Amino acid sequence: MLPLKGTRILTVEQYGAGPCGTQYLADLGAEVIKVENPHDGGDMARAVGPYFLGDGSNTASSQFFQAFNRNKKSVTLDLGASVGQEIFRDLVRTSDAICANLRGDVPSKLGLTYESLKTVNPKIVCAFLTAYGRTGPRKSWPGFDYLMQAEAGYFSLTGEIETPPSRMGLSLVDIMTGQTMALACVSAIVSARATGKGQNIDTNLFDLALSNLGYLATWYLNEGHIQGREPRSGHPSLVPCAQYSTKDGWIYIMCNKEKFWPLLCEKIGRPEWGKDSRYATFKDRESRKREIQDLLDNELSSKTTKEWLDIFSGIVPAAPILDVGQAIDNPFVTERGRHMELKLNDGTSFCLLDAPFHTDEPTPKHPAPELGADTETILKDLGYDRKCIEALRSEKII
Image (cartoon, rainbow, N blue to C red; front, side, top):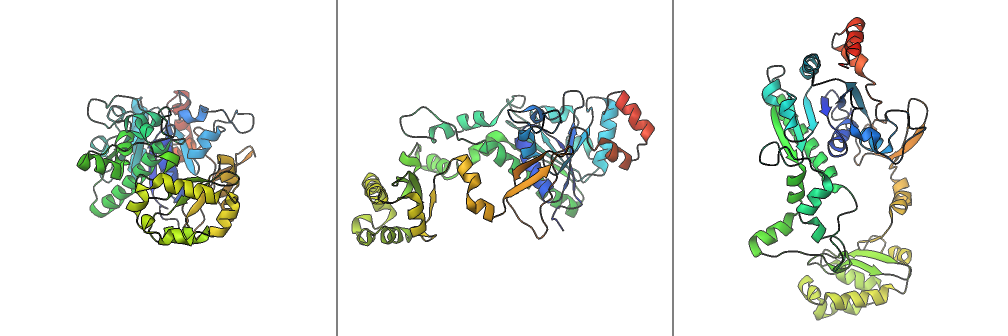
């Protein structure tokens, strides 16, 4: 059985961060129901291009949307209407959690907090993912991944020295904040089942981005050290840990334990370097970083990246430096079964990457839902009859 089977999670989410986190919950077996506004096209990610499946007319045809919303359901509901709020409360009665990915001041306005819902369901967990938090001077500010990278110092760490400030190539702040919300949500559900009491639980893009500074923040707070960029995308203190030139391109080598340096020297035909007292420790090698870079560039340039990887054969930690296409077409990815093929209701097939975890039961494989695809079924399960549902639709509540 999938770990979260029997868990129902309502989401009021949009774009990437929240949907990324709740998709993992759906992959693990939770029933994840997207509650979407019927008046504005629902989750804005449904309209994000440039690539759409088929002729693009399906409300789930955005490939961006499909990347973050597989295995979910969709209900359309106007939370700004009193009737919509009543229906939402009916959903809350049968749910374990709400995950809301909204501006910080919006959840309270929509009645999505534990304070608003505990009389409906005392065990409900209300998990929030915002830009800057639900309190404080920025609670009403919009915010997005790249802004967090800029303000949390990432631009000063990314790229080569003496080039303009640069962001990371992926929206890792969005993705990691979504995962953090998912972890916090499941943890709070465990607590609610044990105690009978739910709670609010918050995360936000800014705090996550800042927290990711990790040991760099610790170095600054205690030593005043401001870490900057390192040549060749290297580690700030461990050597060799950087990219080095080969006969046909680049290879990344990470000798992040002392034992790997002599192994590397042995594999490249320079065992004497591994015994040289000048290079004996990380501290010694760090003081001679450029010297070691030149030595390794010279030796590694005699063979191709593939030839060196075959020689290192998992003994020396190393990897090829690939572009996105090469990364996805990597034979190792195929061997791991990481590709997933899905089909829309109209028969249009497409591919995604599978979930990054494995359980005893295969990951569900359902495409992201069309807007409102499950509205009628879920309302019927709540006790609404066809006549009532038709009235709600005519009044544009659903």
